[in-house]
Length: 193
Image (cartoon, rainbow, N blue to C red; front, side, top):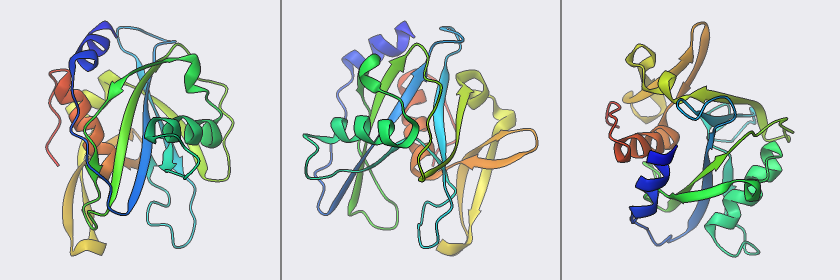
């Protein structure tokens, strides 16, 4: 965890000025089980008709609202609303580069990295179907790396990470791209998106 703290304290992220939509997410590093192999917290979004991220594995977060003082406040509010975790009980380590959605570069997403020593018990709202905490070692193990064939965009292929044996869920898209950047900063490599 000290490597993560040191790296992010020196890092200056590339920020993108949102033209239309702005969202923020929290990459939560949970050290309760291990400081050598901490877990990263993900949510599985609930299935809702018409929601393009329905059922996806993601970081807690959502759209910035006018009453939010900034995107970090959005990440904190959304995490509290979606899974009942108060990020103020942890430590904000830093921010990753802002990313834009692939289909429409109008949505800008900011990712804030927090470390907490324990996150549960989780209290899920209607937007969340499940919460998962996966060890860093599992995410970096090539046996879990896969490809996602996305038919909606003409059969494009994206890198992803399988959640595990017998689990069909996959981390891909913006969440994967943030993980890729996070691990790259720490000196690890994931297949590029």
